Image 1: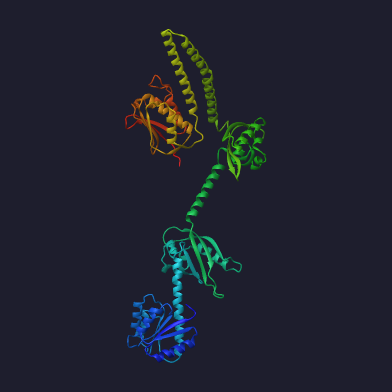
Image 2 (image 1 turned 90 degrees about the vertical axis):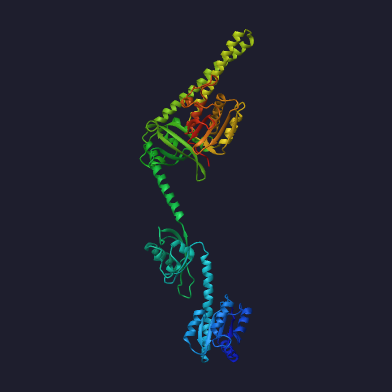
Amino acid sequence: MSEAIRILHVDDNPSFCDLTREFLQREDSRFEVVSENSPTDALNRIQTEQEQLDCLLSDYNMPEMNGLEFLETLQQQFPDFSAPFILLTGEGNEDVAAEALNIGASSYIQKGNPEVYEYVATRIRHDLETEQAYRDSQRFDTLLSAIDDPFYILDGNGRFSYVNNAFCDLTGYDRATIRGSDPSLVKDEQAVAVGEKYLAQLLSNDGPDSTTFEVKIQPKNGDAIHCEDRMSVLPYEGEEFRGSLGVLRDISERKAREQQLREAKERYQLLVEQSLIGLYISRGTEIIYHNPKFAELFGCTDEANVLASESLSERVQPADRDRLADNLGEVMIGDRDSIREPFVGVQADGDTINIELLARKIELDGEPAVIGTVVDADEDDQSYWQLRRERDRLEAFTSIVSHDLRTPLSVAQGRIELVLQELTEGSAVESLEDADRALRRMEAMLGELLTLAKQGEVVADTEPASIQEIAESTWENVETADAHLHVSTDNSIEADPGRMKSLFENLYKNAVEHGRSDITLRVGASEEGIYIEDDGPGIPADVREEVFEPGYSSSEEGTGFGLSIVEEIVEAHGWEIGITEAESGGARFDITGVEFAE
């Protein structure tokens, strides 16, 4: 409302218009009264000045149309005109008064003595303030309804005086139900007490301007909702407390995540504390953390006993300390991914114990560190030591095959080559050529045998490997005659790329060796894993298990180790392989249990 209050007075008596103007402007210097003597003239003025008019005074008894008809015409022609309409009449008539208020008049005043002008001025001010307050509330309601988060206002008595649409959506109650009710409608007794506690803090002399706290909101239906309430106090009117307001934020998802983290932490703590394997974290050989089993392995009765040792080195015999320090140092600087080595441990009472120590590099507080395990090699890990001995024997075997057998084979092949160059008699040449082929076959078999021995080692580290890239690059390095390759997947799997190449190489060779020269191979992915199939003669069902046995071959030229190597690679990854018939009638190898990379 502007500082000047412009009033349009409509009355068919010009003298009464002049008198009314004089009295009203005397009552309030802000009043600026303009007059029209007929409703038609008044409507014309409203058409051009409606934005400047703040209030209408209208007589009831006028010859052209009465005051009620004038109001109805005004509403029809100018539906957006919202200035207060005060009806003046010379005689009291309750029916007229009721109808006037019913159709939209803001006030009904009976003309009379001069004192009525004071009342008219008061009514004008009141109706204008009411209209302005209504407009403000409409804008306020529109603004707060647009807020995405639930919003509420509590009056000085602690009852809801306003809530927005989001608050209604959160609680499941409509505004009519919420307004006038106290917070117990949507909070239990404990939550109400929490809100009152934080409100008291805001009202204290040294209290903050606002505060944020967690509260559970109980909707009309369903479980309680975890919310965050940001509360503040409404501006005071003098010394009068007018109430508080707050914005709620649904934090149910955050609380659920926090609960999951707590549960995960509890499980992790339980796993570490109750583990049957000694766990430790160190920087180099300096112990930072260990679990109870670690202390138990070294015969320590308390944590201080273990941590009193400045380093892991003091928990192994002197002869092993340099080796342990070197190994951990190599892990720390990244020269080795991990270590798994046997040591002789020294317990608190001086007794010794055979241990196996594993370590891997981690980052702790932004600096390199080591996390590892320690187990009693004599009690808890016999199977590992047996496997280690088997591995050592296998390494010794492959060394013998590689050196002690290959060397004389190479000498024999060289001698035969020299003799072949000197001989001319046909039968002798033919015999030596047969011997040469046999030696070369033995050489190939030894090579395949060495590969078979190495490929069976369990794959410790994998990385995302593109099926298409490995399949196609391997194809380029294999003699495939006129054969064709089609790859229909761009998926990647977690695997050892080097062994995957060997897997594809042996499957390609097997298909080309036993199929046509123009055989077609297809590589693809299924829901269960990957497959390699061809359109060759296929593999009979009764020998599909035998083909994976070392030395099995249906070809005189083959070594019989190709598919054995494939199976070893598959099992080293923890996968499975099976043979079926392809739609083309050829052989199809399905490798399942693979992990597709994201």
